Image 1 (tube, helix red, strand yellow):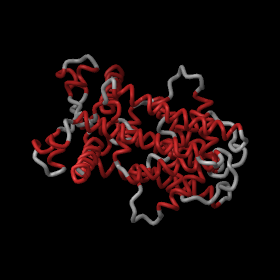
Image 2 (tube, rainbow over the protein chains, first blue to last red):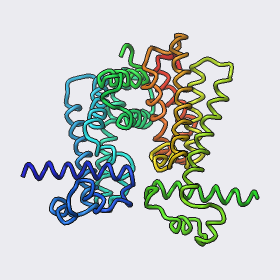
Image 3 (tube, chains in turn red, green):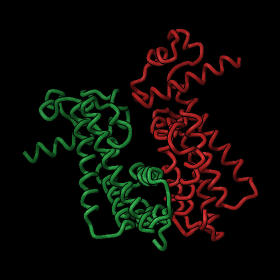
Image 4 (tube, helix red, strand yellow):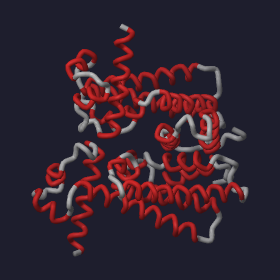
Length: 194
Length: 194
């Protein structure tokens, strides 16, 4: 059971990589079988097809972000620290699990309904919760007055390049990277001495 | 001559849209001919193939960014205003010309050498020039001390979501959008009273 689950994760990650390099449409189950060194017939023991892979990647990651959000919402900390924790969440998921990029970039568009609508709803829920925290920070005088939608997308996008760029052997450590990005983004919201 | 040039631009934009929706690999010349309502044989009067389209999109946009950069470098303004002008350049190109997103997101990966190396070189040139301006701003005491690479990618990524999101009928105008993003990003570099 555990071994099969881990095989599935391997397949998901290989699929996410193929989706990035070739696009979802151009990736065949045969390409995927080759990538994970399985026969196509064995691949179907783990996964029913491309659509299931895309669904799993998208919902696994949407739920991960939402679970992180709900945990952060409950913490007895101010909004500045909540935004910091959310930036940390995005950086952590992006660097730990490659498939999250696939879900949050363009590939979710290839979902079909009802999954497409359900995914958009989860994303919208996440975005609204994020905006509420920014708004609460503005109301509490922690942040300068900015449009919460613009602030939200600026923050989310600003951490999205990390996966493409960050390699563990770079001169800068993950902690330094995170600290600097937090400083730029929270400084941008008017927080002093981040 | 003019008419044919404009037809070519229509083809480039339709191609960029198909590349985004299906990926470069999965887009056929037939798909493209359908999208611009031409027969495949007529399409070849305008363009030699997919590779030419991708090359044109990538180099047209790389040159556009570099030309904008060189013009901004020469202006007799401080580094804060240069970074502001660069943010404006990115927003302007992203909202005016859809194909720029294709060039700057993933599709450039599908170029073949020598074009791939040449494109990477242009991009690297652009990034180095951008980082020099950030460094000059730090040296002049305009910005707080940040890692210039992190600041660069944070700024470039932070303006990348606009195309996906901004529609002229939104409650917020393009000018307001730009002003707020500038405030967040320059505030993040420690500039007071942006």
